[in-house]
Structures are given as structure tokens and as C-alpha cells.
Length: 115
Image (cartoon, rainbow, N blue to C red; front, side):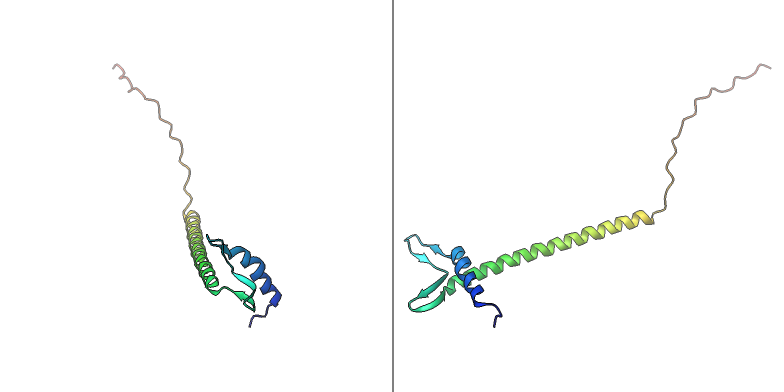
């Protein structure tokens, strides 16, 4: 048994679901999700429509769960890559900066001294 106030359930069915999921057929007839009274019965739910709504919500929930799973996996891969790159950077020995090479001027060969 749900430990929820019956007025909350009634309000959700009547004010939210009835407004959201009831529709009108082309021949002007209404298909109601929830009725307060129908043929002497009180608080009547259209179970085929309820079943359809619930299956649609389950399918939508499944899509969202897969998107969240893929997102978490992508973040995990990104964090592993970041950690790996930081580890490589810290573990690599520091290399001295290359010095600029200044070319020596071309020297002409020493002229031979006359003997």
C-alpha cells in the first residue's frame, strides 16, 4: 500500500494527468484519462490509456538512462586521459632548453707567409 495521502493521488490524476493525456477524437468525442464519476462508479481511470502512457514513460526513462550512462563513461575516459597526460608530464625528466646556435663567421684560410 502506498503511504501517500489520497488527496495527493486524486489531485495528480484529476488535475495533471487528465489535462495532459485526455484527447478529443475527430468525431468530437472525448477520451478521458480520469473521470470523477462514470455509470455510477466514482474515480474511474481509463486503464488502456494509462497502460499506453506508462509504457511511453518507461521508454523515455530508458533513453535518458542510456544517455546518462554514456555521459558518465565519456567523463571517466576524459579524466583517465587527463590523469595519464599529467602523469607523463610529471614523470618525464626535465630537459634543458635548447640553446640558440650562433653560426661562426666564415674564416678565410690563413694566407701563407712568404718564406
